[in-house]
Length: 329
Image (cartoon, rainbow, N blue to C red; front, side, top):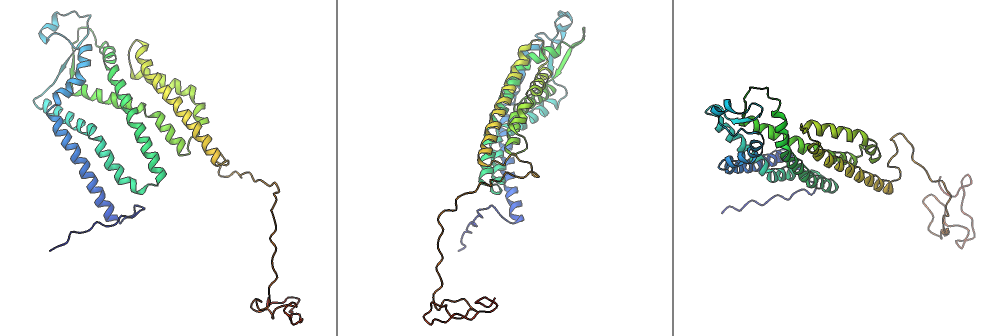
């Protein structure tokens, strides 16, 4: 009867042959892809509800409440758009796209864990702690950015639709609309990750908190311009709704960087020195304390090459000296 193979004992430092690394990578990728596919299959049955979730705010803001036949009789001063789809394969392609996107997002905890499980054995304990902290902070920040993007989509759509020339009907392909919403969510989510990136650079010793604080005027101007471009609305409320949180997160990142620099200086006063700058040496004389006396060697304990004990060995005879020394050297 065959015995079950015992698991190999893992190296505490995470070392393994190249073939083991490749096998581990294959297993992690397989689990990640399987999780995405399973969630995508489930999302395919609810893809209409998912599309409605993203489509409804824009449709309520700029959607035409009349059919194509009634567009010719509507008020031309009112600009609106009709959400459409083209081709027989259009709905099927949209279902595949929405399902895969939903699987990638909903299954992100699983495939991110598989990625972490593959990289973690090669990291030190401190690196693991920092990595987990950054991931724990990055996920809520990205979600907050996506939430802001979802909230300003109706206002942004209302402004963009106003650029439609007069006597022209605007058709909004649903697949392009989904792509636009996805890009907007990703851009806003990544913009909220900027403070986290600054903190990472500070913890890595690339940026200091004092230098980051010196950029505050340029950062406020840059964030304001970005918010104005990302939220093309005529009212300043939408722009400030995006700019104020990013600026607040920037100053929080500066505060964390300053606190981290202070902690580093307390642990190592020479942390801020350049590589070619000499550190300060304390040359103040200090008390050496009590001097320990050295006992004289007793008879029979002479080193090799020395002649016998000494004058106190009981013989009263001085050892033989060579060139003034009593050993072979």
